[in-house]
Image (cartoon, rainbow, N blue to C red):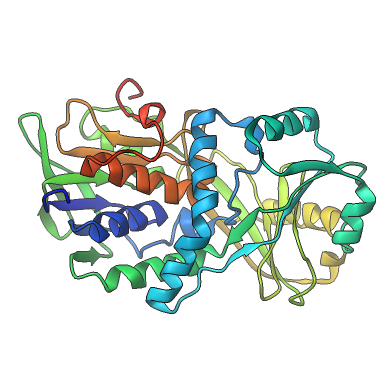
Length: 366
């Protein structure tokens, strides 16, 4: 086991929480800092599909993390449920993509990657999803795609961390800058005063770039707003996830249906808008006409940590000894979290990494 160090993690979303969990489980002392309540930003706001929306459109770097995470999610959820009694509800429903422009590319990708994705007759999609709208001509289907109920995942991770003696969580603790001595980062300046550690991890999602600016580093991570709506239906209303024209419907086990999402470059403004609400409702009714009669029980917005090609930054920051990044997951933070945080722990603890870490290294990318 690596020698015990104190690791300060800035950011309490799913990436920060799972990084803390992996490091503390391996015997490290962890102090996690979150400027509001843990998991209340992008991690809470997302849909939780355990797949990139269009996995064939991503680089091999994203695909490698996604495949590892997809395979690992069921055992992560089971482990957290056993430890805490809070079930993250990894719900395997499968996913239909409808009327894709790049269907041939999707099917070629599936053959190459050996993923269970295939073209199906549109009548088969209607048989499987009787509430599906009639305006679609083509479908492809992947059977093993799950979704995770992300607010419950956050609660479960927080509860699991509270059971580990080597973890301290400070909520409502804003980080304003770093403590440096020569070339080394020794801690952070916060609203609670200085907090020092042997290693500092920046996992602050869309806010990570702003924090790194204080060191004169330009990290191309920026907020990208996404809005979602939530319907309440019967628990057997929608059996499967469906996706068309960039919009999706996700069933939860209890009948809640999530419909999302917008992509807006509005800086750090996350105010829900009536125009987005109407646009999302129109998409919902096109996908599933019966939703026209269903009650909208929620409408919210979150800020994704946008990054070039959606490839996260995972690893040490060159020229800033003691400073590490695990951020910039863009639209796939929930999908990529298990692999990203396992890879991160492997790197920090000097273990054999689960996948090649080179594509995610901050060196040469900031």
